Structure formats: structure tokens, C-alpha cells
Image 1 (tube, rainbow, N blue to C red):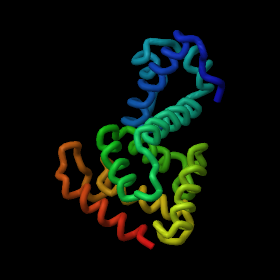
Image 2 (cartoon, rainbow, N blue to C red):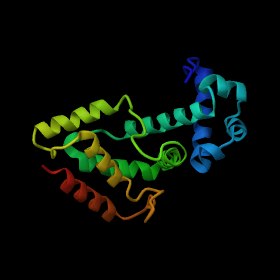
Image 3 (cartoon, rainbow, N blue to C red):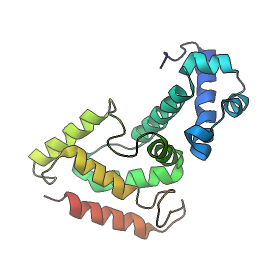
Length: 188
């Protein structure tokens, strides 16, 4: 992906493009999204979009990275409190369901199996889980697999759940069940 603009005006334009694209991709997926709708919503032109993001796939990747960064920025990783992390992720994805939808489209249209990607922020999280394991606060096992399980549990009632999608006003009982269940899974 080309480097994002550094001028205030360029940064504002790229932000408008990312936000418009997030809505378009979350609603319609990669194949169904239309650059013309994105640039109209962002009040820009194709030349700027392609200059900033390379192509539609590059824009999708940038949107997923942007939204994942927002989620990670909103949730503090405390490996000693993985139940609390799971509840925070649950709450955040209810407030901002677009990331879950984007990742679902990513799985459907690009990578049906395997790890989606390695993020720069992954290693500190995994190292924190390893440290909690060594301190006897978290069960033994592969830190990535353990975190993946906690994440899956946090998304059990996400807006794209195949069983029961939660809404922002759902009862506290789901949060409590999630906290208790993750506690049992990660307990040494």
C-alpha cells in the first residue's frame, strides 16, 4: 500500500475515504463494493483513492487494518484478565460491528481457512499471555490458540453470529456468562 498522505488536507481526505469504504465494504463485501459509491460518499475522486490506496484490494486491506487498530486501541490487553478482555471486545464489537462484518467478508471472499494475518500488535499480546502463563495465572498452551479461543468466545453473539446476534441493549447476563466461561477456559 502506498504511504498515506502527511498533509492535513490529505489526511482528512484519506480518512473520509477509509470511513466511506468501511461502510461500503461492511455492507456489500469486497466484490460488491463500488469505488464510485465510495468516492461519492467521501467527496473525492478516483485519482486520490488510487493514489492513497493503490487499488480496491489495497483500500479494503487499509480499512480492515484501520478498524482492527481502532478495536485494539479501545481494548486494553491485560493477559492476567483475559475474561475482562473478552467482555471488552464483546462490548466494543457491539458498539462498532463493522469490523466483524469486514472480517467475515475477508473470510468469505479471500481466505476461508488459516490465519488471517499477522499484525504488528500481535507479538506483545502473545508475549503478555506467555508471561501470564509462566506466572501461573493462565493455563499452558499455545498463546495464539488460547487468544484465538478467547476472541471467538467474545464474538459468540456478534452481529454476524450464526445462532443469535446480540444488540447494544442486550442483558448483562451475556457479559457475565462470557466472563465466567473465559475464566474457566484460561484458568491454570
